[in-house]
Each structure stands twice: as C-alpha cells, then as structure tokens.
Amino acid sequence: MADVINTLSQINYEAENDTADFISAAEERYSFALDCVVERIINNKSVEIVLLAGPSCSGKTTTANKLRERLADKGHKAYTISLDDFYRNSVDAIIGDDGKPDYETVHALDLDLLEKVLKKLVKDRTAKIPRFDFDTGIRSDNAFEITLDEGDVVILEGLHALNPLIYGYLPSDALLKIYISVSTRIYDDSGYVLLSKRDLRLIRRTVRDFHSRSSSVENTFDMWDGVLEGENKYLAPYKYCADILIDTIHNYEPCVFKSRALDLFKTVEPDSVWFAETQRLTEKLVRFSDIAEENVPRSSLLVCEFLG
Image (cartoon, rainbow, N blue to C red; front, side):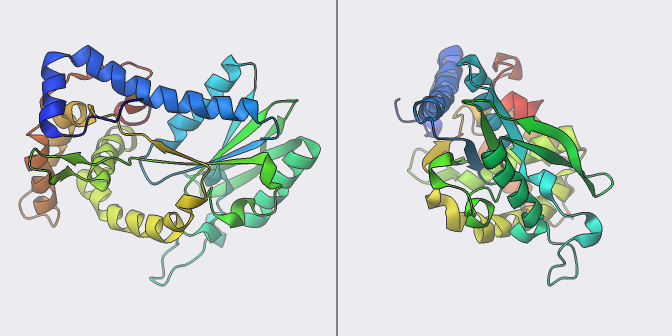
C-alpha cells in the first residue's frame, strides 16, 4: 500500500478535487491492514488469543469487531473480550497517590480472575466471562460463557493488553499481539507538524465524548493529561512487544471532524482554562477543506467509533 498522504496541501487538493477516491483510498488502507492480520491468524493455526492494545481513541473496539467479522467471513468464529470487564468492583478499587481511584493502572483489573479465565479458555476451550457495569461499579463474574471450537479465537482488547502481566502465563505460540494507534502526523507545507498524533486523537475523543457520552469539551480536556500520563506509564513500555503495528489514521479525517469540532470548541468561554487550547486546535482545523459526513461510509472506523 502507498504511504499515507499527510500534508495540508495534498489533503486539501484531494478533498476538493477527488473526494470519493480520497476517502476510498484511506478506507482501503485500513482495510488492507486488517486483512493482513486475518490472514496471519488463519495461516498460524496455533493462534488462539489475539491481544489488541492501543491508546485512547485509536479505534480498539471497532478494530476488534472488524477483525471478528472478517474472521467469521473466513469461517472462523471469533469472540471479543474487553479488559474493562475485568475491573475490580468499585469498593475494591486501587487508590492513587491523590486519594482517588486509579483506573489507569493495570492493577485496577482483577488480574487473578483474568488469569483464571484465560487459562481455562486455553486449556478447557470454555470459560465464563465477566461483565462490568460502569453505572453501578459492580462486576458480574458469570455474565456469559464462551466455548471455542477448532479454529476459533478470542480477541482481547484494552489499554493493558500487551502488558506481560496479562498474558505471561499463556503459551507464546497461542498469542498474536497487536498495537494500534494514530501513527502519522499531518504537516503544513513548510514541513512543520500541523496536527500531531495526539492532536488527532484528542479531536476524535472530543467529538466522540460529546455525542456518545454527553461529555463537555472542558470535561474531555480535563481528563486528557491523565489519559496521556496513563498511556506513557502503562502502554508505551510494551508497544514494541507487538507482533503487528496498525496505523488507524484516515488522512481525510480532519476534513470530516472539522465541522463538529469547531462547533464544540466555540462552546468554551474565554475565561476557561482550556480556551487557549481550543483556539490552538481551531486555528489548525480551519485550514482544512470540508468533507461532509454523508460522504463517509457507514462502515468506516470514523463512523463506528467517533461520529456515530
């Protein structure tokens, strides 16, 4: 696949002159990466558990679901499990140095239960999977059961999926480790970074949180530094343990997110601590040409995970 177009003038030219092909090329690039993963799983018949990790708003959930669907198309049933469902009950939460529950640490998960479940899946081919209720802060340990037939796989996704504490007790040949993120920057025509990888993820998260989680821009920004700190501490050290790296950038995305993001940034008042940051991102986004959301395929990662 060709390298991704990642300069302002190239992106705007494609957006204005060849919108459909521009979008199609980005979608095909991501789709090709997923197809390569599926082929690797199928060709390596020993793989039973796919570990999928990545930072916030990298597209973990949608990628896991799309891998499951592609495997099903090839006749291999796959089950997706979120590490979030292994959170400790809120009464047993790990307390951080600030006196508040620390939900970023790997120890926020019930690692003993996780080990028990994964070992049973590999050994007995069946296990009961928990479900965590974020409204009540209580986990149901026997929410549903998975039974693996020959060729079936489990896709385990979450921030900590590449941490050896998650998989170190499992046979290495049964594992395939994947790291996904936005791994491409967008540059202006002078060669300077216009939108960093973190900028792109923050824009994704701002749009997603407002429309699907009723979270204000300021609330999203309030959490962002803590999210990044958790990623640096608990994810970055294990990135290079991955067997496969997937870049989930869709290089037309600033053109699509632009309208929603700019409207949201306008809600932040000048006296807000986050006003300068929203102005910084506004000044960058206004330089991109517009692409209407209806041009984006409903099956796109951008729609499934961020635009809704």
